[in-house]
Length: 351
Figure 1: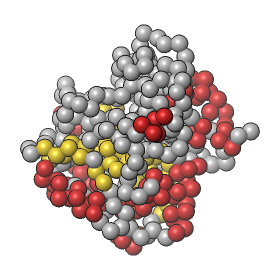
Figure 2 (figure 1 turned 135 degrees about the horizontal axis):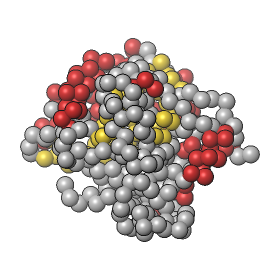
Figure 3 (figure 1 turned 90 degrees about the vertical axis):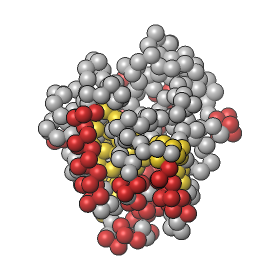
């Protein structure tokens, strides 16, 4: 039996407990780097605990919790429905505040996370996407389809990793994300419901290069989920505030209902290799440019933001976030399976 689909003897995320010195200096021990990199390749996910000053998380959470109720009523807010039966899930996109005083380096360019990312993706990874995911309370047992955050033909090696920051302690009690550990190792675009080369096209699916007409067909095909469940069923983790969760973008997962009354907010920063040439840009105010340049030029584990700076104060509640994680590297694209179509890529020309 291939190792990628063999029954697994692990069902919990690997947690690397960082020391205070590792958190403040960014100098992880070789043992911790070894554990984290191995977990990323085996499981598709690792938790770096004690990686962030919790006071920084509290400051951002206070602002976003206050915003959440208002954003839930705004027409410009994007809700991540994608449920099997079409019911609302209470899962909405909610990005972080963009005031330069709130661009905390241990969230926007976390050094311990960057050390692991550099080992997995190569030196000086690029950030092409910054957003957040909020699970509002009061939506019963609604849930998203199991999916990976990919709309297009992609590689079968690590090409994008998201750094997630839960702003509070999370567990099934407040809607932690369902994870299918190890699913990234044996998956391709063929497993996606919206892959035109994998099955006959339906009216709600795309033809090659066309946009999906809705989100109901976005997700992993049922037969692949059934097969995976036999060797590695999904789980919902418990993760402490102050952690960074690194997740391979190919990993199957799903947003579940938040049974608590308070919104559960998680920030998301997608990193790609320096050579990948992702066309997406992070929209930031010009006042943030100095901080971005500092992160890119720092000596230890620099992080490069592919940013579009605008000379105005930005309302983080209304900024358009572009989930285009595709590549413009023609050499890389030529190495992908050519019988699956290119898939759906968001238009990035409307900033």
